[in-house]
Amino acid sequence: MSEQIVPAAEPVTETAPAPQCPRCRRNPIEAFAGDTGAGSRMALARSAIRICGDCGVDEAVRDARGLAPIPLGEWPYTGELLTWTGAR
Ligand SMILES: [Zn+2]
Image (cartoon, rainbow, N blue to C red; front, side, top):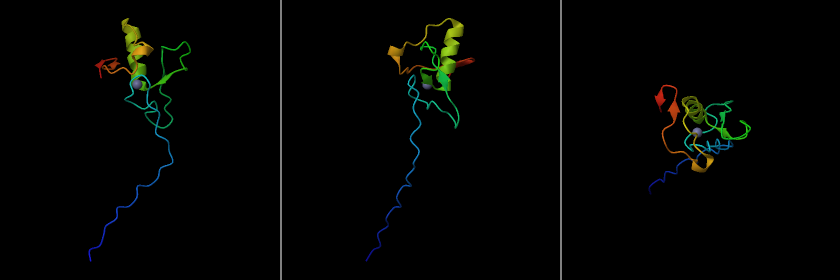
């Protein structure tokens, strides 16, 4: 008689998955515990739409360079995210 090996059950985690950034859908808004992400410049009140830090930098670089912002209707944005030193 062969013994059957039963895999151990995955431990149940109580933590909900981190909310994804609505602008890029690539990064969590919270990159680390306590991170509040960034407020999108597309909202009248900056705190109204939370986005990830990378998107916050992208919006700031676009603003500083006089580039058009990515409109809400084009979210999730799939292009490269700009950084102060180039594209990421
Ligand atoms: Zn993002």
